[in-house]
Length: 216
Image (cartoon, rainbow, N blue to C red; front, side):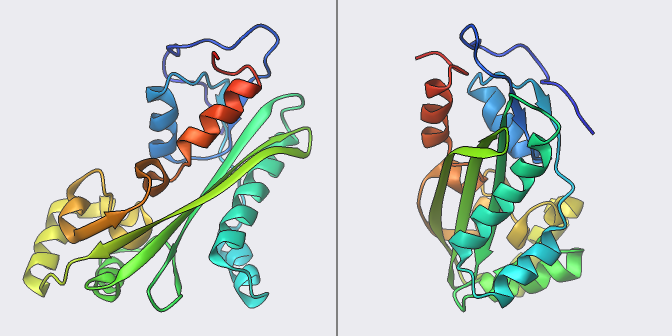
């Protein structure tokens, strides 16, 4: 489904700049772009079978960075075929546990509980990738990571957290939103805040300025 931006951006694109299309259904990424005044022409989540692609990448020995980049590329490339001339932004985030496993969004409360039990008391990585594609060609790409250490909380706290978060626990990999109640799970966070939220924002803004999508 294609939607347009929710409100007029703070900054407009320069004359002749290509429209920007977000190939992601993430409300967090959309909110980050809106808060930065980035003008979105449309939002069109890509219908990529992420689970199948992730399994293929894992079987092929891809690193977490390579997998995140490939998933972001697949989304952007798919949507770009329907928007000739536009800049299409694809993005993906991977969670790598201390044991090197990849986690996906939990299917329900029980799965979220299991993920949080695996992550507590350990340090995991969030790897965020983003790419701009125009007419089938990548014109910019970036991958960044952050390391997050969960404190060794007990089962009683875990159940209290799951009760408080409710169904939203299934909306993010790892079962938490650092910008919300999930912050109570952590003892240490090292890395860029925007990367943790799923978008390497500062290098992205530099790239967008180079294409006239935001003012210099």
